[in-house]
Structures are given as C-alpha cells and as structure tokens.
Length: 484
Image (cartoon, rainbow, N blue to C red; front, side):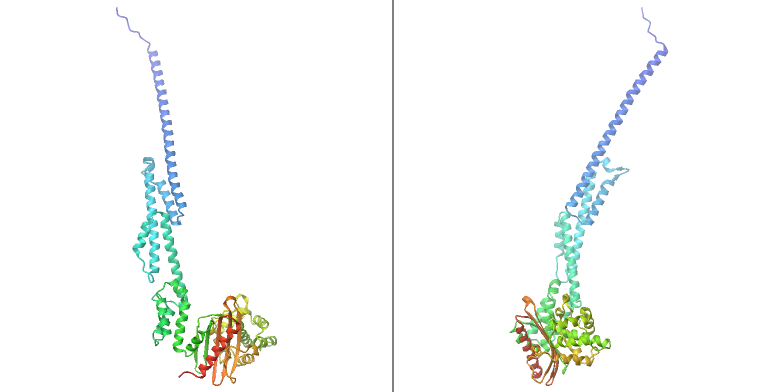
C-alpha cells in the first residue's frame, strides 16, 4: 500500500523561502562588510608603510646633504629630488602605489643627476682658474678633469670647486692690484717695469745696468702675486740703474754709501744746468722737523690768498719754529694752518702728492719723499705762481739764520763764501735707528741748487748727521769740479 506524500499549505512554503533568503542576505552582508574592512585596513597599512619608506629615504638624503655641508645650488637640487620622489606618477596613480621599488629607482636617478651637476660645477670653476692663470702658468686641463673624475662624493666635488673658485678670485684680485700700481699691463707684464727695462736696454751696458736688466727679466717671469710683492724693489733697482747711466753723482754716492749702513734717498736740482739727480726715489720717510718748512709755506700761501700779511702771533711763532726748531711753536702754527686738512690743501696746490700730513695727528710723523721736498724748495726759491717773491724772501731770511747747533746737514763741506738756507730734522725710530733729514738752497761761488737728503737706519744721531754732511760735500765737489 503506497503512502500518500505530505502536503504543506502554500502559505507555509512561501514563509520558509523568505526566511531562507533573509538568512542568506545577512551572511552575504557580513561577508561583504568583513571584506571591505579587511581591504581598508590592508590599504591603510600598505599606504602607511610606503609613506614611511618614502619619508625615510628623503630624510636620509637630506641628512647626508647636511653632513656634507653642500653648497646652496646642491641644496636646491635636493629639494628638486624630493619633488621628483613624491610626484612621480604612473597614469593617475602615484608610482609607488603600483611598484614601491620605483621610489628607490627615482631617488638613485636623482642622486646621479646631482652628482653630475656637481662635477660640471667643479669643472667650470677649474676652467675659470685655467683661463686666469694661463698667461703665467701652463696648467694641464687633463689633470683638472682627472681630479674631478677621482672625486667620488658630493663633498669632495664641492671642496674642489670651492678651492678652484677661491684661487681664481685671488688671482683676479692680485692682477687688478698689479695693474693699479704699475699703470696697467702690456702683454701681461707691468707697464712701468717694462718701460724702464726697455730704456735700460738702449743704454751702454755697465755692470749696474746688466744686473738691473737681468733682475727685471727674471721678475717678468714671476706670478702676479710675487710681482706685486717685489714691484717697488725692482722699480728702485731699475730707476737707480737708469739714473747711474745719466747721473755723474751716482758712482761717488754709491761708493760712499757702500761704507755706511744708512738708507738714503737724494733729490738734487741744479738750476744752473736745469738738471735733476736722484738716488732711491721710491723711498718714503718721516719728515721730523723738516715739516716746519711746509707749515711755514702753508701759512704764507694762506696769507696771500687772504690778501693779508701774517698775523703778529704767526710772525712771533715763525722765528723760533724755523731758526731754533721749536716744537712748541710748530704745534701752534700747525693748528693755525688748519692742521692736517689745511696742510693738505697746500700740498694739493703744490703738487706734493707723495706727502701725507700728520700720521696719527703728529706733525713730525708726516711722510714724504725727496722729490716732494724738492717741489717745495722750488716754490720757496725760484719764481712760480704759488708763492710770491715777498713770501720767498721771508722764508729765505729765516732759513739762512739757523742757530749754530742747527747748522749742519746740506751745508756740510761748503766753502765759507757760500750761503745755505736750510732746515733739518731728526727722529729716533726704535729698533730702526734714527731718521736724519736735511733740505736746503745752496747759492754762491757759481752754484745755485736745491737739495734734499733723507736717511734712516742710522745707529745714532751723530752717525746720520755725518752721513748727510759727507754726501753734501760730495755734491758740492762734483758740481764745482765736474768730470770731463
């Protein structure tokens, strides 16, 4: 007997199907939510890991830059690197989303770019140095390139660049200074040295000229720095050699000074023959009391401009300042003349460009040259447009009435019928010994000349006075009995 199948009402079957659908929907929802949460968490940690790796790499690069003390241009390159690392994209997505290792590749490429730029900067600095030094030193460009190639780090390349750039700047500065002191360069050689050398080469050869020519020829092969340091020395040697070829006094002066330790500069103008003889014209000396003649000339010039005679006070002080060499009177008149500024106005008018008044405020520390003192004596002794004959007569009267203990110097060795209008100065300079100076106008017995003798390195005052008086005697004898 077959049993009949159970039958459920249609309403019950529908209720059960709906319940099953709801259960499946809940399970699917849970699965989807779980999957979404898992993906979100994974993506977050993946993103955070990449961000940390990126920041670590950039920070390492920046830290290395700080340690190596990179120059500003290289720091700018590192900022560019950071931009490249963070902005490198593949389509709309950052490259490190797709391939995190590409971040390292970008950094390596960027570092190589910086290194290449650093090499280029170093090469540029080296080529600038080569171009600056080339007239004097022949450097090997391949050696320069090799030095750049051997520098393996940014720090080494930056050091090379800085060294070469500093060297080029030093050379350029030295060349500029050499141009200023020499009046310019001709074929990369000091113009004044070259000019004197060419003049000497046209003279008859003597041992003195030969030594000067050889010294100058060697000088012209030196670097600008050494030429600048030795410029005044070689100019003095060339000028002395040139003077010796034209100056009959050069030989007797040199023979006498070879027996002395005094350092001497002489300037002599013979108005009878309109000739000038000089010795060591490039030297500078402190004036000591010979500045008192400049003070007097300044006040005379001022009185002429004001169309007024010297004041009574000025006249009362002028006599002891010149005749007795009174320092107190000189100080008062120095300030009456306007101090350094007033004296400078007269110096500018007189063309005494090698005289600097009153170093550190002391009139006795005025620096001067023998040539400038001759310019001053020309104004005081011969007709000119600056000092009148009345001013000249006033100055001559004082300078020819020097008291006995002041009557020495350029008056040494003169006959009794010869007049010397003079002024002397003396100053102890510590370990450098004494500076002894004398200027004057010598007239009589057929002679009319002005002379300045400046000296230093004298062990005593008496030693310096003896040196100047012996030179004065040589001058008188040479001019009175010229060699045929």
